[in-house]
Image (cartoon, rainbow, N blue to C red; front, side, top):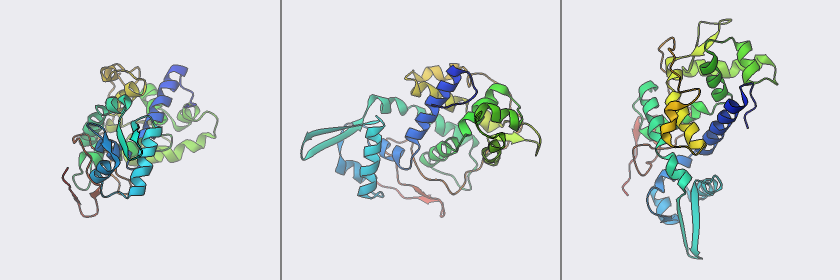
Length: 263
């Protein structure tokens, strides 16, 4: 559970979203999950779709996805084991285009990235330490000082601990400030996360995606100041594809191209 100074219902909702992000963000999770789209498949077929991953990695990711309740492992006999999406994974898939649409609008990469890389970059930003609680608090309160943010986001810690994650969010372009000693506010791209957080909240609560637009926090429309889009950093790791049934291999970002394969 998240332990913030937000109202209990909001804190519980935020905690579910943070748990959902922690479930889907780990490296390779979404690529392997997308490789399982369609009817149940054997391990060898799944591994062939992500051939750039070692067998040990594929085994580890499949086990983690099973533990997370996103993949069902069925042992038909000792030599016949299949893997398939659970209902929870199936309902997750429509959330991915929402994340891709936000990334496409606000991501400012050095080169064009496939949707799978854009989504993974987005998820990595949102799972930075204290990122989601800070963004939710700014959405609720509007322009807020660092000290006031700390009282809500980390009520049991020294208030100065709020500044490292705040500086990171400013560097990522999700939060704006006029400088040291000035209050903080959501940037345009931070405000744009409304559909993403609304969709993640609906999915985490087992609600239909149509509930996203009516989210108690992110369903409200406000006007953000500033217009700087966040920049995709090169130290992130790859993940899901929202526009393909099967996830492709990671982009070679250093050379601006991606490998391809046929199914």
